[in-house]
Length: 359
Image 1 (tube, rainbow, N blue to C red):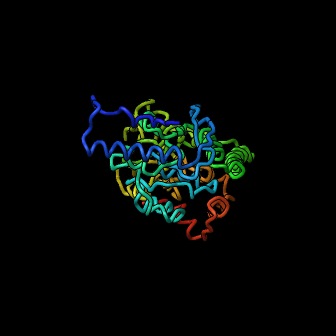
Image 2 (cartoon, rainbow, N blue to C red):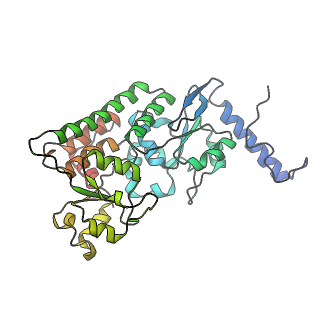
Image 3 (cartoon, rainbow, N blue to C red):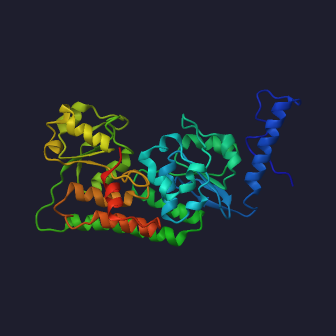
């Protein structure tokens, strides 16, 4: 029975029946790689529904996957469900810095794995076909038509709120036959949200909502805006980022200064140093009262759509309501998370370094 690889046959520009030698060789190579992709994981297939509701046919057993787009954060979910070994691609150029060093600690072989994107962040179909993954996982909707045209089964994820993150956990548990571990991880994350809500509800004094902002100072924008909005709402903060119109990525400095947040969360230790020394920020309440904090960074920044978002909620609750979460041991929480879900014991010094953020 003949199998046709979509996107590889009849894709030339006005192609006729004759082709030059180099072009013929390239087409043969592409067809061969496509056949490897289709046949390498066996004939058994199943259908799964991705986070966005798309039905996708994938191999029964997926032993190799490509994480495309937000590679480090996608990797973190695979770390958490104990499926690090299925990651077949290396890190994109932006993630080969010290900021993402925990990726290499959790997955030492990642430095030897091939990249699947160029410096512009666009996918290399040739590299992906050579990798022959059973499935590609991406958060980039624009990539899906190109990947599907090349015959690559593609799962699309989204992350607008906490529920979306839990859908990613469920999806990965189903795709990679790790349902029990995924359910355990989901229970942990949901438990942390309940702990935050219980902590906020406790106490005799009325709950006060401090004004807060989470910003990347390089762009003066909220990273992953909808997820940031969800986090700040969950920890009962008055999110000044909501004063920036939907669709406007940057917050004008004047808006920040006028809003004068009581708590300011920034993206890196460099941002923290800038806020602390730049005279433009000197009169902010958060600066004067030493309530400027850098986001912790492990396998990914804690308030990005990653596995460690579940730690980030605890951290943010303590930073915005220190009086209600004074007994929360974040060093201990971090160590237990790494031991339990990443199978990597870390000591108190290493946990404190994660909590301090990265440059």
